[in-house]
Image (tube, rainbow, N blue to C red; front, side, top):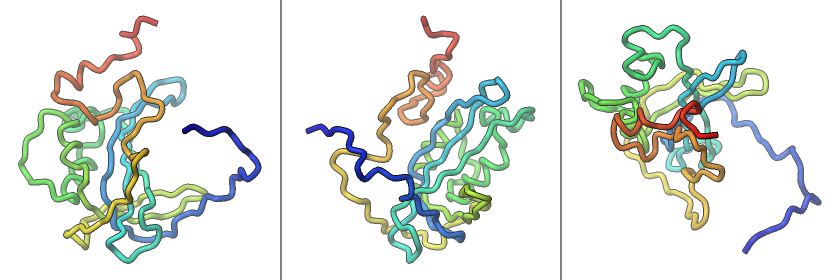
Length: 188
């Protein structure tokens, strides 16, 4: 069953900012996305974080978002994680309690291990934007979060999927990840 547009009750005032503070979250998805800045195409690593409902905190079941940007001048360590800040990526892995010294072929493989891991984040507002200013270990390692039932929509659904293959979801190997089509490779 479909629906039709009905603007009688449409408004832009339903957004409620989440209060500043520390939140216990679950890493729900990680996607690499392209964006334009100063006429150049750049990439970012985008985390979707679900606010846990098994912890007494505001905005339970809400989402927070955090972005890592590729470095303009990546060093040798950064190159191992596709040009993102190696130290920041390793901090995220450490706070998510991934095993130290575990080897990964690709950043995509590391990101797959991060999915559904619990961490804590500190949220502050900078003007009108919500910013995660700190990532830490969860204070509640035993996660008892109850997911909302949803027959039609999940957090991982892409309503307008990208043709660039920019999601880590579904990447099987380093070769698959590296072979994602670039704009130059498309026939149009």
